[in-house]
Image (spheres, rainbow, N blue to C red):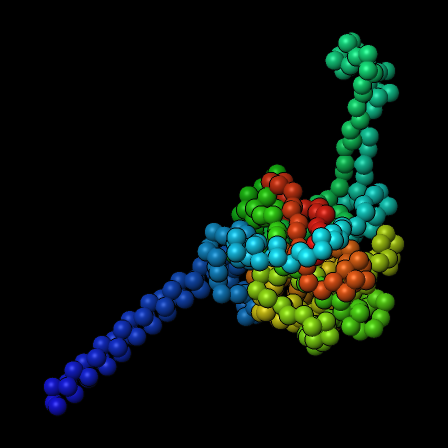
Length: 354
């Protein structure tokens, strides 16, 4: 009996010792992670981000993709099963020189670069000047615009915060911005997106044609919309929020009003598995931020801060009217950004299929 008690005591002591060693190891990792976080974000980063930076370096300290790392073959195959009738919804807005634009971005302009008249009159295309009984000519154009013109995706380097001007994973613009774009987290790092998409028709839930300018979508609004629609958010979803502003495109005043989710709603969506976030507005979140107050102190874009630091790419100026008209709350979502090295975003023409 005494021998059995001694054996049991030794086992308990061994278990305690193992737990203490494991705790010391994890504490050391956390300390090292804290030091690296401070190094990347700058001293006192908690003062502007609070506790809203996620578990540090969730996908590794060198990751540039964020939550799109979740997208694996199993997720793609599951999303493909959502296609039942084959109806395709074009979620992109038409863009031309008169289209609305966020005031911090350059306007869109398309200029004819080559034309049949020019080629023949200038005669600089020798291959057209002979052996051309078919009278073949060609036309091309040059465009001047920003990758955030019209319907677009924000790259994780688009908005930075704090004294270090740090973005996703603590990458500082002071270290990763070159003369020809970003050397890390540029839009070329984003893979094609093929996942389950859900529509949150908040305007429909509130019973209005469009939310009022500056309306802040709350957690209660999100939860109420989901309940009314009978929709649930799953890990790896593209969550598209309809405020109603998209129906006014291309009216420069009405289409750029600022209803959108507040930072608490953004955080709730993140905590519930959102992989990609989008709205039909020009700046995703509510603008201006009520009182200019973010999670800690003043912050004109707390939603962007929270989402980028969790590795969530943002889609803006989506056309969600067709989905809303059909009460299409769940669908296959597909979008492919341009592979422009170092760019902070990409014009896109996303689609929903069901």
